[in-house]
Length: 200
Image 1: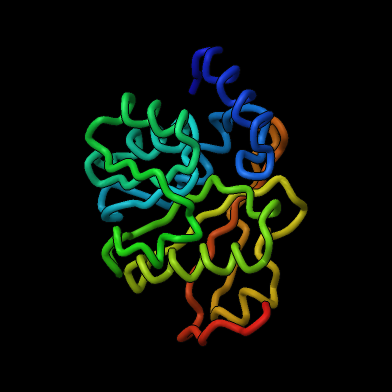
Image 2: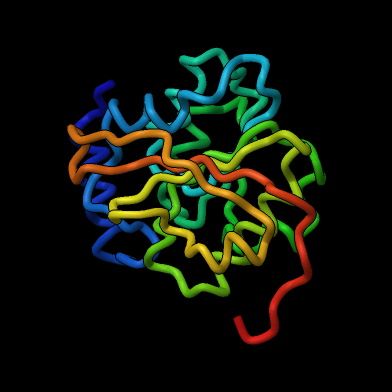
């Protein structure tokens, strides 16, 4: 999967403007896009994508048979929002902080079959990561899963947070040819989740 050089320039500009929210110098490559979407199929139901950026994962989802109108894209950066709206006119694109998806009542609970996350969780405070996961799992169907990539050596969600939220994580695989190399984790519910921990 290739994207025009202008995408890389735009991505670099966004990273320079806000490195903690963009988290990478360039869009993800084809190997990572294929890996993070490998568990999603045409019959997975609506898909929620967090931090789609230039839309590389979005395009991979459509290539896997997910209908464009079944995609909801949550993007914080206004430049990326405009690009996504132009490239995927039948998708629902919302300019929103992903930490608010469980609070803004813009999305219906238990609607989505999968969440694909391009968010740089390692750059976020623990409380923000917790809000993102709480919101995402409130929007997922009971058997839905959350797919997260990371440039780190392990799961970007700490084990104590997974345990607190009643979640489990499994490494799907690695994309060594990505720049930089990345891994993908599938996060799913283990049992009924508990209330938020004060001061986490």
